[in-house]
Image (cartoon, rainbow, N blue to C red; front, side):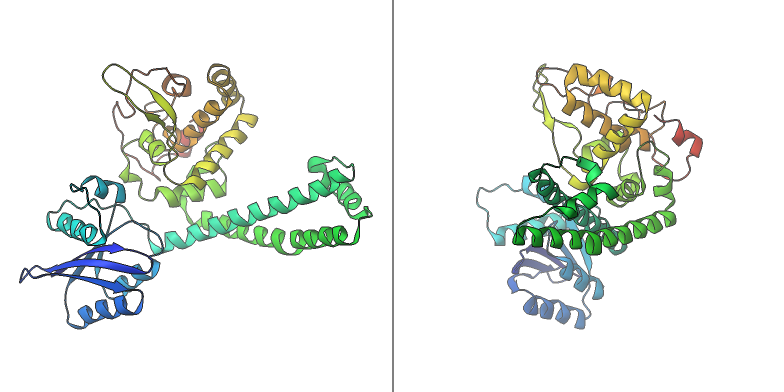
Length: 371
């Protein structure tokens, strides 16, 4: 068997590999894509069994497809954890490849969960719609600026029939009129139809996913947030409780504690930023529509401030309320969220009985009661 430690770069990769039968160790630098593809195809032609290890990085989709096509085993590791295992002060590409190979041979390689190809493709659907909505928002803001310059302050009413007629009726200079016309055409004929089509595609995918449909029973969670949550979290058994979900999404505070001193900072913002954004949006929608959530939000806002209150409420749909039993591991924002500097907490984040997470088997009544 050939075991390969790969230090991957967008333009090349440095590899260190060993034949477990002969013990022969070799090192090479392979340029992308031709030289690297030729090397791995030659190994496949020889009938060799190959295992490749590399750090999690971007721009490697083609490489992963190549190894899957050749039926080679690919291990992807946590880059931060691999970095902590480096002892020497020097850092080179050769030493990085050797370190990965050493960890694989010692069976100490920190493997991470890798989503399937179908999962990744569905993520592209979500991200494409997200970018289209951002582009539409930028165009609408530009048109709002045109209306404000002409003394029309309609805000959301600008996009109703009467506001739209007034916007189109303004007599502007030639190039300003051309700009308004082009922006309206982009909005009407390109962005709005595209976003509507992508939204329908997301709803169809949600209908196929029982986990996403079950998540929609939670207050404030729509089809977009539910599908994004399922795709990003992936295998729920990777986590023991909702607090670990919140940590995975970067919704827990930084901590710099020593001895009896406990010091907490702002949230870590690690993990997927788009899902974190969607959870905050879902929490704000629920606060506006649900009296119980609104009461908790205002109570926390008066004590800790608006920003901390938003994050605390966002942790509810992203953490304990969705994945844990409502009575057992429910996240209580007032009791367990302590973000202000100088404050302390008595419990650690995962101190308590962990419960097995089950996406589908819970009854709808249990989901509806977790507020």
